[in-house]
Length: 406
Image 1 (tube, rainbow, N blue to C red):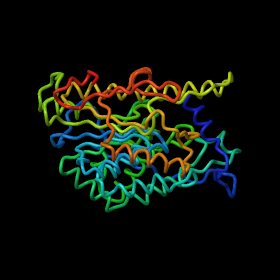
Image 2: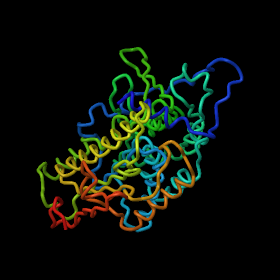
Image 3: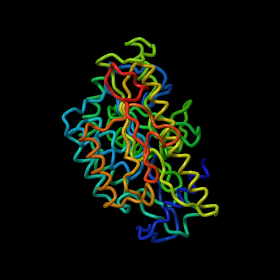
């Protein structure tokens, strides 16, 4: 999978008409000082019960997806316009979902900021392709200096204070990254980080968002310093989507099960807690011909693996929800939507506006929730342009068996 991701990075990074990093002299320049990670800001064991968490009623998980995050921003905005969007007790995000998560956590008054970010930026506002002669000696094809500036403009002292205030109320905001040393997901407690003294807490918060969105091979990893046995060690973190395209700490479900009784309930009672997953994009890749050459074959294989990983996580969260007595909801870009980007990091404003309006429509229409996860094959529940199968939906009424069809 690592080779496939690297090849995908090579393919998506070689876009035409992108700004190229220029070097006035030969040399790499000085690195920024990595943020120091204090104790208590990551979930050491996500299965443990979470101290201080208030009784969860509404959980939200935002997926990875690059520019398809515009769809997520649209769904949240449309949902707000229905007047039925709840305050979330726990919000999680990976990759592009991590960039949206702080605004989703703070509520619908921040929808306009998310909309602006996902409909007005271009590729040069996110990254710059490095000079080709230097790439063999670098850790990525591009530099994320523009994205750093963009994050710094949005994540400021006032926003941190608001997140910290909600954290003290018992709400939780989590972001996922991938630690290259352990090859495992790391779940960061962003509310605890927002509660740290400024400016150290603010730098760490920003760096985690940057790391979570750092596509391997395309964007450079982000370095952090850890205090281990009296000495500081460096670790490199990349895109949270590599290990968890979307997630919810099992300890959250455990807290709900402990309060409501940890047994499977075929028919959920009225007022059961709710889990919501918003997928930034489709849940099945588009069909396309593949040339019998190594790069096209590896690219198609990587795409299949990443989509399958997303569906597996959706199924995993479905069963965690069901076992905890939580009602499951998910929404994704409709499979027959005629919107296809060249890559998830080709930030085309026209495409992002189309994605945003698709999400806005889906959110304002209910939202258009599904109540079971996607299956292995799109036939019978997700129509494709080539095969118009019927859409399988599940009646969300508590009296209905959530596994039955209407």
